[in-house]
Amino acid sequence: MAQQADLRIPKAPNLPLARPAYDRGQQEQFQNALRLYFNLLDDSWRSLLGPDIGGGYLHFPYGSFYDTTQQTAASTTTAYPITINSTAASKGISIQSGSQITTEFRGVYNIQFSIQITNTTNSSQDVDIWFRLNGSDIAQSNSVFGLPARKSTGDPSHTIAALNFITELTVNDYVQLYWRTSDVGAYIESKAAGTSPTRPAVPSVILTTTFVSRLD
Image 1 (cartoon, one colour):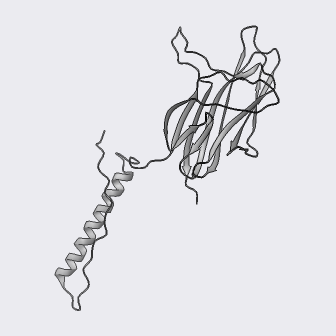
Image 2: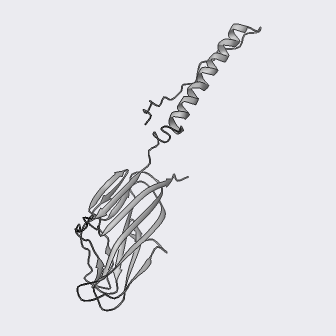
């Protein structure tokens, strides 16, 4: 792997003023100053976008989060925030108050989630999941995820609710996921690590947020 070079910002040269009569020495000095400046520009662009370390100096906000708790509903007529209690990696994006995806920089963001939902009832159930911005529902952001009836006693049915959503955010805006269920026997589930074979735990929620573009 190529070693990352320092990125230098070229400074525009002080070009000599033209003399009344043609002066070859001055012309060469003028051309050499421009040549050096354009060489520095080439080096800077190569360091920024070249094949070895291209993008190495570009930094964009991002966040990767998950939740390890069981999330249940006490009522089918109440909306509940989906909580997130763990951070895998982040820069410029954080989780505040247990559920608020909060940005430090204005821009367009892509929010993606994968949520493990489970049904323990003998009937099919629905779970709604939608977005709120700064405490207010985002219009046209709801999705309904259907769950089949449990397979048998002690063997519930499982579904992954997955979606991505692009929205514009300004500094300190926050987005939340909310949910409701058609029966309290359908909930957001986490599972411990498995054995035979060894496999990772199942978070109840996996959520990522990535910067897409600046706002004009």
